[in-house]
Amino acid sequence: RELVVSFGEMLIDFVPTEAGVSLAEAPAFVKAPGGAPANVAIAVSRLGGAAAFVGKLGEDEFGRMLARILRDNGVDDGGVVFDAGARTALAFVTLRADGEREFMFYRNPSADMLLAEEDLNVELIKRAAVFHYGSISLITDPCRTAHLRAMEIAKEAGALLSYDPNLREALWPSPDKARTQIMSIWDQADIVKVSEVELEFLTGINSLEDDVVMRLWRPTMKLLLVTLGDQGCKYYARDFRGAVPSYKVQQVDTTGAGDAFVGALLRKIVQDPSSLQDQKKLEEAIKFANACGAITATKKGAIPSLPTETEVLQLIERA
Ligand code: ATP
Image 1 (tube, rainbow, N blue to C red):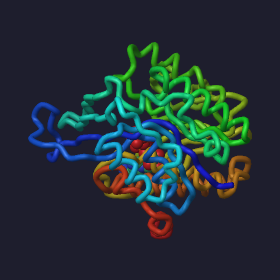
Image 2: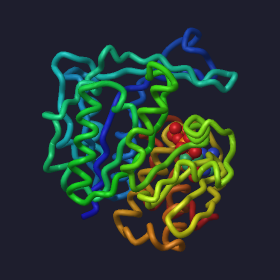
Image 3: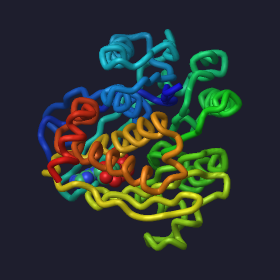
C-alpha cells in the first residue's frame, strides 16, 4: 500500500507575463494551475508514485482542464467531484519588485469550498497509506466538515496523516481565527511541515531555536519539519532531530518548492515507513525531498517544474 491521497483545493493562479510588477501594473496574465494539495499529488506521481486527489472543481472549462491535468500527470481523479453552480477558484498572484507577494482571490464561494461530506470517495480515502492536507479547506463549511470527516476515515483505515498548513492569511477573517483553526487539527497529524513564516505565525516568536520549534511538537507526532528555502530544513522526530542542507541551484521561482518537498518526502515514507524511526533513512529521505524542492525552484511555475525521480537522483549525485 503506497498510495498518497491529497485533499483540498485545486485552482488556477493567474501570474503576470512580466516579473516584478504589481497586480495593477501587470500588462497580461498567464494561467498557472496550482493549489498546494494538487501540487503534492502531482509531485508524488511525477516521482513514479501512486497518488490521488480529493476535491471539488467547477463544472466549467477551467475545472475540466484541471481534472485533465491531474489525469495527464497520472494522478487518480476518482476523488474529484464537480459543482454545477460554482466556479473553479482563481487567484491572481504576483511577486512585486519589493519582494512582497500580492494575492487576489476569486472565491465567492468557489467550487473547492463547497466540497461536502457526501461528496467524499470513502473507498479511495480508505486505500491511502498517507492522507495529506492543508488548512485552506478548514476556512468555511461545508468543506471544513468534509475535511474533518476525511481525516477521520483515513486515520481509522490506518493511514498516516500529513499536514502542511500552507498559511494564506488573506483568506481568513482574521489572523487569530487562522491560528486557532490551523491549530485545531494540530494534534491529529503524524507528519507536519511548516515554513519559517508559519513557524513565526504559529508560535509568535521569530526564532529557529529548537525550544521554539518544539512548541509545535506533540508526543503523538512522528515527524515535524521546518523548511528553510535554500538552507534546506530542520527535522524533529521522536528520538532524534537534526538539519539537512539543500543543494545549490540557480533559483528562478520558488512556487511549488514546498509542495515538491512534501511530495518527495511522502513518496519516500510510503516506500519505507520505517524511515520515520531510523535517523539515517530519514536523512536520506529528506535529502531526496530537498533536491526535489531545489529543482522545482529552478523553473517558473509549480507543476511544470516538478521533477522525475531520475532528475532528483542526478542532482544528488552531482553534489
Ligand atoms: P512554498 O514556498 O512552496 O510555499 P516553503 O516555504 O515550505 O513552501 P521552501 O522552503 O521555499 O518552501 O522550499 C522547500 C524546500 O525546497 C526547502 O526546504 C529546500 O529543501 C528546497 N529549496 C527551495 N528553494 C531552494 C533553493 N533556492 N535552493 C535549494 N533548495 C531549495
